[in-house]
Image (cartoon, rainbow, N blue to C red):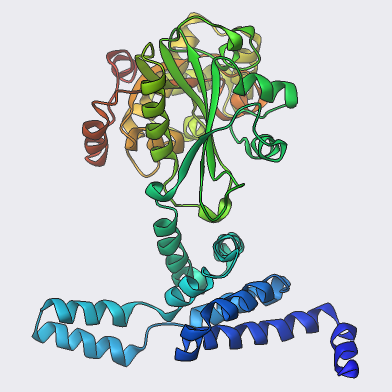
Length: 423
């Protein structure tokens, strides 16, 4: 036994990973067997631990193994023929069971291990990294996506407010994952969770200390026009009764949950929480970036406002960003930039090539309310959108109707934006 023990640890890391992959595949096959049903938790626990010992090549090999766990072709054909002859509920069930891949059941059984759900999320994170180079793994990702969307359904998630008294480890995760407006330091973070600033996050019971997604909210007197009004300002500690709840940043913390809808439910849940807590709040809006504006403006054709900006500032548009930073845009060019942004969002917001932030809020039932120039003078804000930010307004009584209009290809806009988009 001692010699076997020594031989294992004298192997190269690659050899140990290869051996672990073989043991993991064997364990997964046992887990799918009838014997695995009886001892599933113990076998799943071993499999989860083995996954953690795999190197990059071993993990790729494991996904190849999952790809091999496809539905049995003959069984699918038999079920399909039976259904074509008799479309009864029993035949539908037989067909559904036949077309489901064994890997879905394998992932379900792996999730029963202690920490199993977290490991499956980590597996998806690795899978997404490989997917652009391994088209054969797309069916594997479909199964991961399906199960994670079910397990992380908003009805199963806990909504919690994160404040200055939250654990330091949790607050550090906000700093780490803030994706819209970087949190510079602890002082900056403090200003985003105290007084008239709030932060809310979704948590899953299986990942109690891990925020999945969080949103930052400013409770203010009017719909904001610039990010400088909301971040790093003294009024974050104001005591006046707020009239507006402005959502100014929403960040996903877990890349393994890409494609799982969380943000739309988060905003609506937070709005409901605030409505009950603060009766003085009458409007719910966002101050949102337009990350696709520069790319669209650089390639747009047949738009007079865009053509005029290119003629004045050049095709690379760096001079336009500089002019915005310096505050030297003429009134005519300000109108052209506002018109260009309105055209981009109002005409293309409901298309697959529309701005991703716009599509998120419009699909969520918001109305495109206002274009704000020089609203974000950070390097990122100037690089992506020449400082433009926009307000989307959430009328809780109209979000469902607005969502339906978006599905029909319509962008719900204020009169001001509609007028600007005709330029």
